[in-house]
Figure 1 (cartoon, one colour):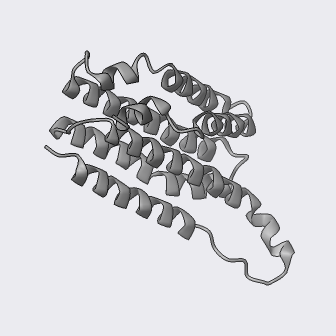
Figure 2 (spheres, rainbow, N blue to C red; figure 1 turned 60 degrees about the vertical axis):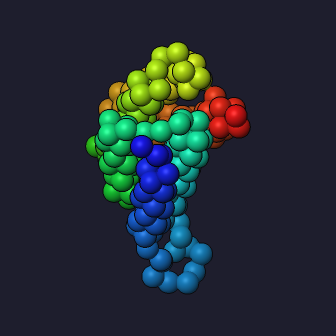
Figure 3 (cartoon, one colour; figure 1 turned 180 degrees about the horizontal axis):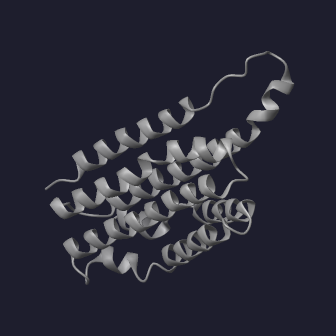
Length: 191
């Protein structure tokens, strides 16, 4: 089946996720600049989450342009990814309100880790559909970057119980690693 509906649906869901995330931000009561100070952790959590969502949207776009078609397994794998992405607004608000507490930081990290795992499952479903010898499978390769990312996120989850700010730092590092779109799929989409 064609991939257009899957991409359009995913774009819509991701746009809603970004909208819900920003709606978690409440305006300060007063008009003084000091009113923003208590909001800094939440604003930083929002910025980090926005970057993560943008990274997933960007790479999702490139990946879907690199494939020929989708099937039911791919559609369910995509829904699995969207499910975990949809939890980012909830964990962003919790992290932003309690950045020094292990449970909210761990919840945020767990959602990021599950998003990464869901991405790998979606990628594997597309490889299975197109065949291990396909150009797409060759572009995916061993996905070292994805595996390293998962290890960093798991380390972040573990560090939550030692020092939550170290975990947040590791989550920022992962976002920085992925700021440049995944070029493996961009080259295929040009064909």
